[in-house]
Length: 401
Ligand code: PLP
Image (cartoon, rainbow, N blue to C red; front, side):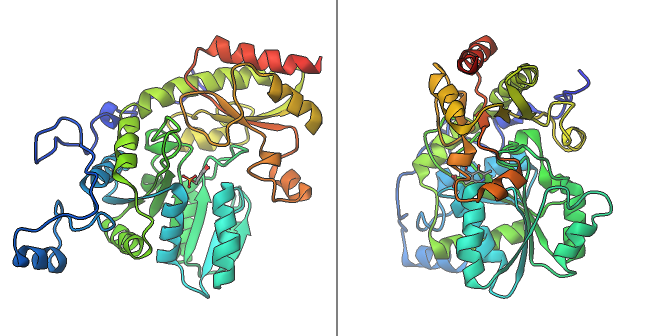
């Protein structure tokens, strides 16, 4: 199919990536090392652990934990990276990475289309701390890249972007953005949560660090929060050191649950991508739908770049209903199967009204400019039978007839 990239490269390594048997017991799955400290047989051993830290030796779970480490190695393998560090949530990973890379009076160039938590952190924490935040729109990197170059101003510490974006599914050309970012000396950080390492590997396209909210597809079951930064060994060592200072570490139980999710992430994403494409096409033809945002559609302005940098288009889409807010509320309240859930990336199809939830803090003019009208519904497509999902969407939209 011309508009669905080949799944070549979506290897089955997700199942076993970076994971060995437990060295202590031979257990076939990594156990939950539910402990805060680790004990030492001698004073010299304790001293060595602090002065000459070694991979596979642990002191205290804020500094490192075997279950968490196994997850870090797994995602490192999936991203084709050198190392990773896991944190308590996506925001813990993002904020720790930013506190590692930025100090007051440095410049952060950020794409405006970001998850609400991330833009809130940039506005409410980094700006008052003294970081100069310069905002750009998706597309700033295209053409001759002059818009992004001007924002970078010849010297920036970080270029931060998310792709595909939430909730309008825009796609940033990672390769072009990274080239321009590096030209200004910036560390290029990509939030790849919507794609996961299964659908895209930003490091291969020039990014320096990738962040993931593991709460979403990698965990995959909506039962825990987690985040991770992955990239080169030196950079990750710095982020890890800052995480130990700030303390937002991942709990071993969360690491275990997320690792179990990672084992099936490839099959879940393939199923959800197949469902999402069918739904996007169905909604595009629906008389009460004005617009569908999904990079897998040939009508999407981001289709070409998505085909270039993603292996498949993923399970997130949004669509604008030809109705006012009150009518859209009636539509979503009448779905029988699809619940209103303010998260994404789980096995069930869920929905959200971004204008009155994740993006409610923006003015209506800002929302319009970003493509988030009152009638926009964001769908996180699950792995259910496609006919069940289509049937529920049609049933809900029929209240407008
Ligand atoms: N990045 C993206 C793309 C997200 O969608 C989210 C949450 O919705 C985050 C980061 C923040 O992750 P968490 O909620 O795990 O802190």
